[in-house]
Length: 446
Image 1: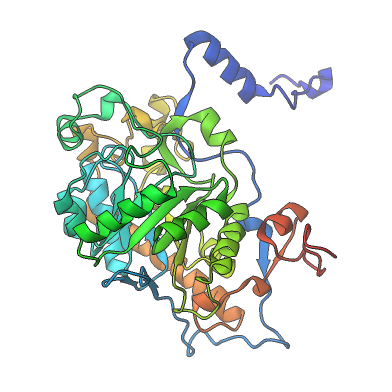
Image 2 (image 1 turned 30 degrees about the vertical axis):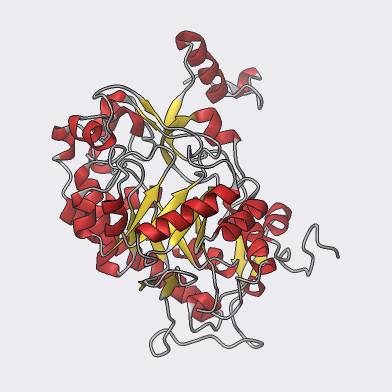
């Protein structure tokens, strides 16, 4: 093996090997890089926060005999049938097209087993997901693929998508190799041809028009269904205020660590703001509008946070910062079995590796999850996948409860910013909590 260090060679911080490879790929192909997943660059995240467990000035709860509630109600502002979920961890929108039919079924099975909701994603409602989802949120996107009033009525809530954390300001992509006969039929598209969704809704140009659209959706569904508005985290403070003014029952804020099935790599890494920075902005907007109160169950508009949620600690930290619930996407796919070592040899064959696979757009996923290839999709067992997802959701919930009890809280919604400190100046400034060992919140005075 060559000893480069002994020869005085070192890698450039600006032009490292990954950057050189990206330049060479662009020069070879003349096409920008498309991939799935979310941002891979290091960003301030929930790992940069710590909880202040109870000791003398606070009393912890005993896990074996004192309860810690996890239930949450979403959409009780205007809807006559809000969602009552047993846990505050929901499944984010991932389309049939990006995912296989069995994978959508597994998401419904896993979510229903633990009493939470799943979300359709672009491209319409599948019988697999509706059939297995006790609570199904229907996404209303700029493409309006598969949208029809009957499916809106079949849903338990409607999510109007204005942006996504991995690509705020950009539309969706579904490459031709994943547009099977069934996908094409649901989306009214030609089979095998690349699909690129619009980046904005054709029905409105501003918040006043959105108010009209939300009222139309309420009339179609007899005012039963909660209406969510989802934004990609950018100008979060203003976007949340406008969403509430337009009539949203629930606001979903998706940070740039959020994943996608396919978009430009340059978009994923350079557009949007971290989840950690977005949450306090959203909470501030809701508080100023008087719809976000400290008492659990009394918030007029609920906040769902997504983008990089992986552990029960992430769940608890998001809720301590003011979220009512979180949504997971990438983590749910991993729980189903994506990037599993059992397929290591097959990932190697397609130029990737288990744990690194992000070419969801190619439709060659050996796990049979992000594909429309019937042979690959047949490998995936939706019953086993649903069981794995349910196990993961239970672990997330138990971890969050363990932390809440350690802070003396009898419900996850009782967690608050006062329970948190930051270990970096950047995280302290973004999350608006003190730097550990001090009372200093950067940007908010001494």
